[in-house]
Length: 388
Image (cartoon, rainbow, N blue to C red; front, top):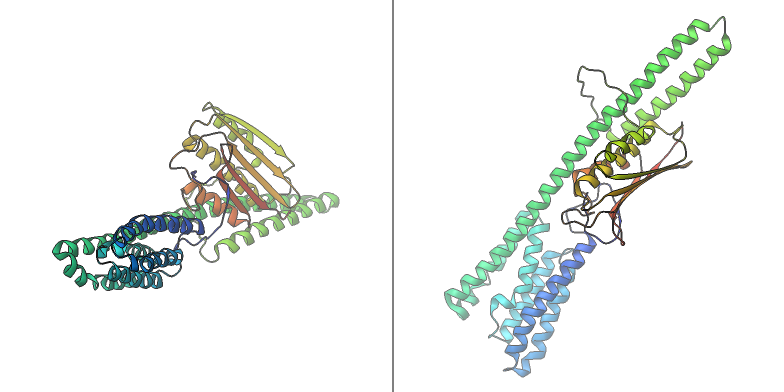
């Protein structure tokens, strides 16, 4: 779990990463537009001093390229074609502007296309861009041809590098999700097994006193009914989350039921042992809260505290607030660490955040994580409760 953005944001489960987020797309446009205006715009103004009659048309074509880059993420092929045509027109109007410079916006579009579209599409675009090299040879000779080919290939290669980087991030996120699902499945198995064990004991007790103490037998039967409803709820939750993919991986050794919010003080004490000041504020009782929700809330607190110890630069204090209401459990963890490089709130970045996101998704909840305006980092989860 890292920090980079200025405001907390909602972590959306299953968010697509094939294309940049709207914020990243805007940043890309502003950066590329500034680059084209600075480099190509300056070249056009300087070259247009000798061709005053062509300057206004060339400037208009530069602005067309800058405007087209606004849609480079959504329609990179169309933007590539438009910027290449406009760049060639600029070069035709002002031959003193190098063809490499005139096609700068097209090279940006090629880089983005290479990053967000299949390789066969980007290779075709690369070949098409290379077809405009003969004029560069005629105008600048072998050096001009080599420079244009080099910049075009570098733009395509940069896009491929970015595509591979995002593919690796997606692969790591998927692996983290699979591992977290397996862990959750084992914990739900433990909870259900514990509930069924209690039901067996209650059934035996009811049988022993059925004739002599019918009221106690009825109490045992009511406890069995309550336990059965709880176990069925946990199983429905698990099946809804995993479908037919869930599989128990036996170890041959019995496992104890997983931790819960009732053991929150133990968790806080373990963190305090490292020298960190931990404040715990609890409001409401967890009685009647499904065990899966209880486990999810505990794991989110646990992972948040772990990330504070590992990644929150200069943090010496963290506050944990758990609020149990009739319809939901709200968990908030806030530290006072400084914003550190490599700790950002981007969705899917960091295996800890992926695990917490999967926990929230499993119970139909939501997770918000990010730096606070006044400093510090916040993780906030809202987990719906269907009381047993």
